[in-house]
Image 1 (cartoon, rainbow, N blue to C red):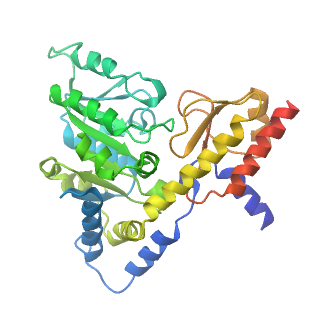
Image 2: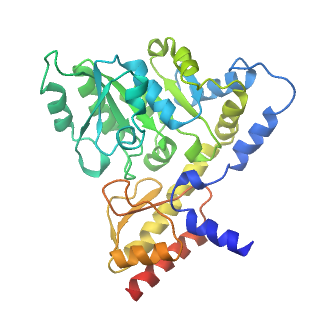
Length: 352
């Protein structure tokens, strides 16, 4: 048992996907596991989850549930585009770097055009340059601007930044998609209502993350413009994303939203990351690479320190973002876990 616990600590900072199912999501799934219930989303659990999301976002949005983030992003983008269109995203965006070509596949060829920008965010001048550099029939027509919230390097777009990006997109007849795998972490970080960094700021469709927030599986695709959701259910079915026992995907959302766990979990994860940033910033030879605004900390360390940590069994990614080591906190991370990691980094630094 001791060995298992130690291994858990060493693994847990690699990804917030490594965490288990939080109690609120687990109990909601258990509550839904009673009797016989209609399939394919025609059930009271799914209806109730959709109703809660409409209350959270303060608008009559259209909601669909899919198994994972790759499907959510890819199908949402495909619904906004034709095959000869293009999607503009940041060069570090998950849809560009980590979806294995799924957005292009499900849209029958829509091209992703990536742009630069500091801290994982768009440089809007660069976005406009990409939109306007060509308008001939030989170039894929820009149709969607895709933002990641929180970004792949742990920064967050403010309401004003989202609004400015959306206004730019609108000027050129484009739609706005948001990859919100860690949207809850951004809500907590900014201390704003969810509507303020989604539809009120100009977002047309949000892919709202559940798995990284404490669920077993399941993302919500939220269309704020209901007309854009026309026949999206057919896309889900064709892509193998229409769950027959849909209640087990939708019920955890009820548990998370009714209890407030979706924000409590995010607040806890952000707090652990803030503590980790504080601990690591005081270690000589360790540099914090980006402002810590959500639940991840990116650090630059000497290669000898990186090697020593890996040799000791610590697991973390170093290819996400633009180099450096990424340490990710989750709802299950503890203050003790954070202090143990910081102590390991300190020891490795002193020994190098």
